[in-house]
Length: 314
Image (cartoon, rainbow, N blue to C red; front, side):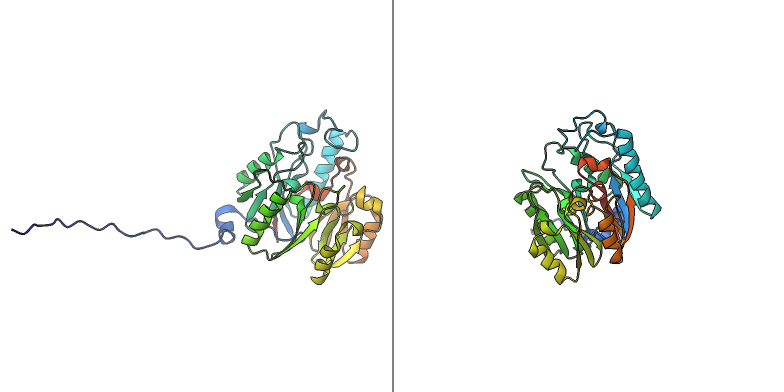
């Protein structure tokens, strides 16, 4: 007698198929309208830290400030900067929490590098800054900004070590605030997302970041601290059709932070008050300039570019 086999239904194949889109494709629907690949495209969203308890009664010398500060004036100047952004249609987001022992935390640019795919959360090099990035990460998560990479291990990298030129080009620096491991982590992410022209810049000893020496005022105009920007960087920018304006004053470049401005849109910048020679040079070359008094903030050796994390441009 033949054995009768019971028929068993086969296991069905996969019924769920991947959505074959990139994170850039998904951004608006799933995350929000975020992304940066320019220093000058119209600024839509930024993130800042309004100075809180961390600037009350701190050791200004240990924090590497120039001198003691007036906390209320410090905050008022920061508020005035943020109001300029709002007056020009920029949405200003705040990091609401921060360590009470981190008076430098207002310098948000150092805590992220924004890309077309989302944020790279950094790992500051200096002990006096380490840990601020935790609260940047929390604020980004709360806003719905994708975090595509967190600098980890023994790597160090700060956001002001990257300066976008266009979607495929960035100036990426190494120096005291970014070691080789950190540089290579960021370089790998940028190459993965299609950045094909990474211009390496060695930040000189005695300088912290790119934005004290080089900044974009429009798509084709940059202001530079000529003695401190390597020839290869200048050559690469000139070959892209960018006009390099040389900061005419050493005092304005190093003391009053003329180069540490923020472009609100191509050809319109907000820069620190008290840089008349640089302002005149920029205006003669078609750049509209708004000035803000940040003399108290400058005591922390930073200006508005340092204070401002870009979240959306263009």
